[in-house]
Length: 355
Image (cartoon, rainbow, N blue to C red; front, side, top):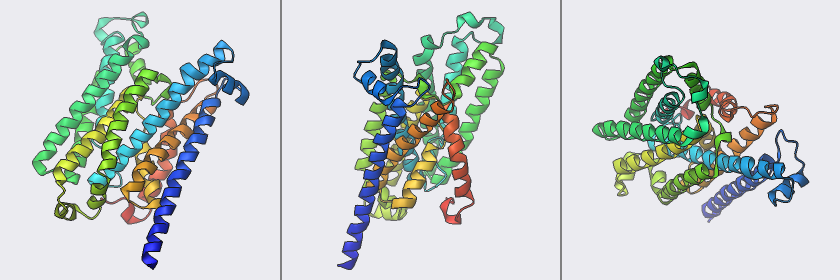
């Protein structure tokens, strides 16, 4: 009786933590929506939200801040849940959405599209007038996504030889990621000044390039994949006891690991292809959640989703607050926030970061 009441209390506390995160996300969403360099008052923001303010303020809210807000909510949730699923399937606390070289492949695909569209390589002699970001934004995102998927399928195909051993997946991801990085460096070396500068700017994680169309595409992928993860939550709990235990419960470990890694990588691919590199979200949030409420995926999945959205909303608000008229790259803010936490993991308890 005592153990049953204790278990119920623990589950109630976990549910309350998820509720707390939900409330925090709602509050932070309002802050993110109304805080910025335009110095819009709360009343002015509410009027603009109802489309009853001046045309300029209405456009700021509906054309800039709401797409940006939605992108932060969706991408933060997606990157965080991807990190959680990666860490569970690979049994590695250091695993993140970029473990399979997804980000590196996306950077190469985007650089290839941008540099070719911005005047090509050094020998073409094209100039600034030939470059238009707006004309190529979806082509760039498409190329980034395609190369990400190619990288995922190639790595998982190689790892099938070794039955998707977690250590093999991680090492293969690092190796292929290095190849994509080298290819990107060579590509940039032969690019024009215009193409190179445009490619470097794309690499910055930036929520400002979000549109309603990109938000809808990201939401579709994140929602479908997250639904699958939620359905398979009990199987991930079995993973925590080891592959042998999972197999004894009738779980096809290799198939589950393949599907999980593929879907997690697809979420990362679509987010990176539209927004650029946003680091550390997939490491920080799952760690914080697991430290507070444990590893029961019935609670860690929704908590990771909400904590990822909360972190990216906070980072975006800080980037626009300290940008002095122009928002800083949100990827730089998340890296600055994540680096101290990453060091704390490394120099913390030994079991926290070992495979």
